[in-house]
Image (cartoon, rainbow over all chains, first blue to last red):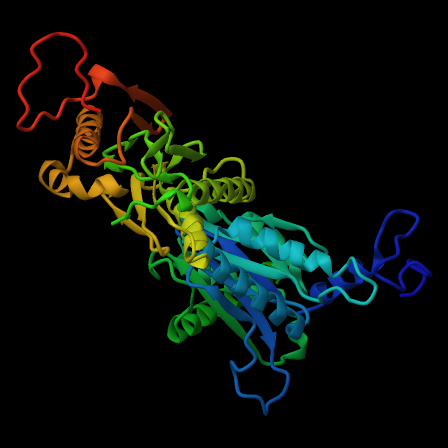
Length: 255
Length: 228
């Protein structure tokens, strides 16, 4: 892979002649090659989903969390390097707490994600630091409704109707564009999100995986919580079934 | 409540300040006397300062302390307004919170204040911020040395669901009552009414301030007999 950035990619404080900072782009690759994460904003709430491959049989399921609560009204998924991601989550929790203490109100999501983006950006300004290797996918419920934001490690932060990062994100993004998210409730979208994640898997390996799901909606009382285990299982199973059905239909058509 | 400080305390807004919320906004009112001991250093001061477009502060206690605090709070509020984005305005609660942090973290300050204003989220709100740095939302709040004389007046006369005119009348009368009895309150009555369209100021002086006669006889002539 050497060649593109030769010579200009040795330090985060070096620009290339085209104006690129290669180290921040390489940091972005940590997220791009990481676990698939999806965030969608529905009519009545927002959902975060992460698909994690089973690293080893010896690890207890659900012990390597990738979705965290930042404050009551806001949660975050961290693709990419998990230790770096935990730094971001920790900072977000502090920002939310400080804001509440100073202004007496819950932090608006835009303010939180802007501050996080600035935080990530700082790491690209100093020679003795390295950029963080994880983006932050935020789902929240403000006064004006549900929000989904992606704060990238290079310092940008945008709001989305639906977004995917990590492996297979292009396929998932295409699927998301087809969905009418603003007309679906969270419950309806849950199965669709599972389907997106499962579909993009390279199933030839037949490895085990688990899907971590969390959401925030009117139904959860505008509190960011994990999707109840039984509902999550149900959605996963239903999604798998639908995919198998579609594959059968496809092979029927071909045959 | 607030004791009279001698000249060693500097100019002292021995004062009457009032704020009352109504459906659709708030009315803030204050007298205009600033005293240094028994000398009235300013008889037409403005004790109602703006913190942002639709949030105002009534000041009582040390004039220096409250002016410094309001400058800081105005600054932090404008920073906050930039951060939350162009389409939004700071809520009354967040401005009051900033003020409370300053009062609470600097216990030596002598500042008893009332923050009142209007925001789209919760409408008209009044936050009392007495000395020490508490912050409590209330339907109406009074502070200052003159306020001791009008607690019962407001307890009796305040009603929920008053109109803007009724609330302005209530505040004006309350302050007039306090000015009649408190030596450190007097001069003009300034009112500021804040609603969704912004803030409007009014000044009442001389004949326009209700006369609180008590046991005094009605004035015989038409000449301006002012109870200051």
